[in-house]
Image (tube, rainbow, N blue to C red; front, side, top):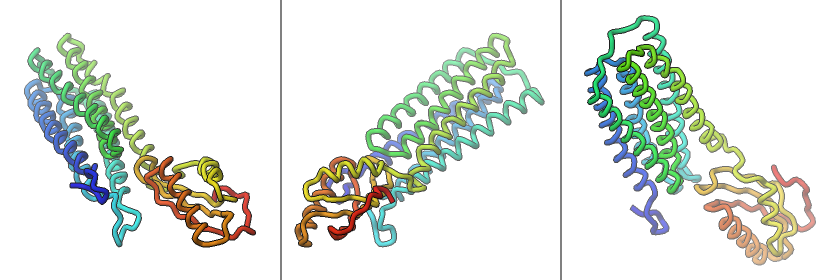
Length: 300
């Protein structure tokens, strides 16, 4: 599928990545569940439950990716890209749930105890394979996400990395159990919960500014660029929102030298072209004012 410019639609590439990682995440869940039931490890079974959220995130990503069209329509004249940010916030919520599950499972094991865990070298080798799959998925999603500017892939990579740390902690705990240190498995669960919470906070921090229309570009930077364009006398009431590299919206008031509408239009076209080249893709709205009006208020 291609966009209106004839270029491949990045959403198709995002969708392909999500399908591939969904298959791998389902494989991870199956392997962890089998080894968890085989060894009797409660921490590994809890880790398998946490890995279910990876698959759920992939499904969520596929849904939001389908909705997050960058092209506007009659009902959404500014496009649909915030759907992708909403999907990323859904992943942050999943991370919060996973953190809660880790803490409650660890406290329950301390409080009630449980049957002894029976480990074997084969079980540890399977867990190392699972760890390798998780690392592959996380780095692959992050690399493609950064290349395509996809928040949903970057957020899902954060989530998968939390699963990597959880798996590492479980392997460490099970090795400790194998060596006779039964409490090590539970002890490692608490710092892992902190790592999961940190990943969720990072996803939340990266996406909230987009949803609440936080300033995308400092108005002083836009002002400095526009004032260098021939014919511009004054630029003020500047506002911007969106995400650099994805889609930004810029509004400003402009005073130009020419008195004819046609010449003023040419200057505003130059302003739009230069801002697009520097910050684009951008949608820019310019309100031209008469020469007699001046303002020292750069931002709104």
